[in-house]
Image (cartoon, rainbow, N blue to C red):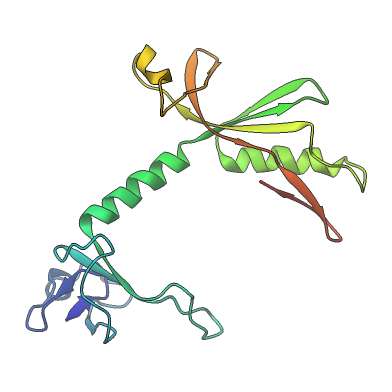
Length: 185
């Protein structure tokens, strides 16, 4: 089996990928057909053997290899991972600050981390973050029905500026003092 260095699609040894036949870019390395690592079963974790892509074990700058081995992934699992990633990126965060009696709505994880860093900057050495609670929120589209609150969902909702959000997770951040303040959540 071989795979395309550009799109990572897997092919029998006698086939050549369209990326190699018709290069897309005039700059950079042209696509080539590469041999897959021997000894790896040509099957996705889900059991599928069709529409596979090959993901090589990552090599770090120092030459060492990552702990994640080379593997095959089918198109369906790739799509599921893409949807899960997009869903995770769309999450909002509501930081409830009980000490200052304020709430901070953050559009993304980076904004939440910035708020936590600024909050932790003013803390004493031996303080904790027990007065903060972070709600990880997913935007609800469509109507909310009674079935949304039945087992196994047991949905909790937050209404913020005319939007409805489902509480995905409740996070209690902690702070580490290792020469510098590090907020973990």
